[in-house]
Image (cartoon, rainbow, N blue to C red; front, side, top):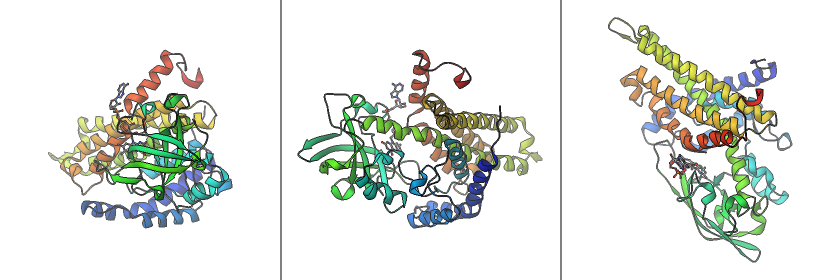
Length: 390
Ligand SMILES: Cc1cc2nc3c(=O)[nH]c(=O)nc-3n(C[C@H](O)[C@H](O)[C@H](O)COP(=O)(O)OP(=O)(O)OC[C@H]3O[C@@H](n4cnc5c(N)ncnc54)[C@H](O)[C@@H]3O)c2cc1C
């Protein structure tokens, strides 16, 4: 058994680390200053500039096939890079990406939606959640009714990441109310904002915020269906699958950086005449954090490896998402505790992480949904104890 990285994997990981350290981290203090002044931390133009700079280093489209100019990296390497991105709290991501399901586009849709998204000229968002259907995604009511060569879309989507900035939305709608969404009753549509939907900002405890998308008799041509009629739910599950290892990979980067800060603080801050790191209470918080961090790292890498090996990744990915999201919340909480009052201030990024990572236990499948999947797989015999080792 080999837990190491190949030379190539290490080289790619190290280049990403260099880029984040040299180009992204220097923006951190200014980001905190702007956010304290209730301004956007990173302007879209600044993100784009960083992404184009990274492109010169060869970092463009981590998951994008090479025929579209991307790197088409294995999931394990993508996971390692998401961990590097997580080390900085600047909301950076590499450019050249598109939602994984956009690659099901027709030739015409490729030109109109996929290629401009990869190039960063258009912004997309993905919308399945509704006010009445979150965890129970198959319960969506947002409707699409056929009218000649068009479909008429009505309803509301909510909590949509990027919904305020998107030029177009990938919307999952009920096209056959007689069938359940899961049984071919739902379809994915590509809908330009110019076709008539509007978005409303939703304030949250995080920086920035998602949006509600409101559709009131929005007419969409049949050619804007992504994939097949009735394939919408399957596409939605494919979209969600990606985040199940990238989100916890990001969490590992956050937890590592935060724990580093806690170790440095424990080695310098003095109370009662000695460093706080000499107290067992502090040592245990550091030990527990490192242990959980390491456990999360390997669960996530195994989930990513499962994707690369062509095995069904769902069980492993649910465990990675569940444990990684919980781990980063526990670690950031301890790091705040080790910093005392300073941890609670907006001088440091700790309270920002505290607010940010709480989301990781909620979106793209709550903790409870991951537990439901993991236990169901075992109770119904879909997977066996012991994982791929048997
Ligand atoms: C900031 C943010 C960004 C998001 N981005 C997107 C996006 O881009 N696109 C999109 O479509 N959606 C997005 N979402 C929606 C997100 O995926 C949902 O909020 C999430 O799936 C939970 O659904 P819900 O909020 O309706 O909670 P509910 O489903 O109402 O659940 C409420 C609580 O009950 C628990 N629960 C529900 N059913 C069960 C059960 N059977 N057993 C045990 N416990 C249960 C849940 O785990 C949760 O704790 C986003 C949400 C947020 C907050």
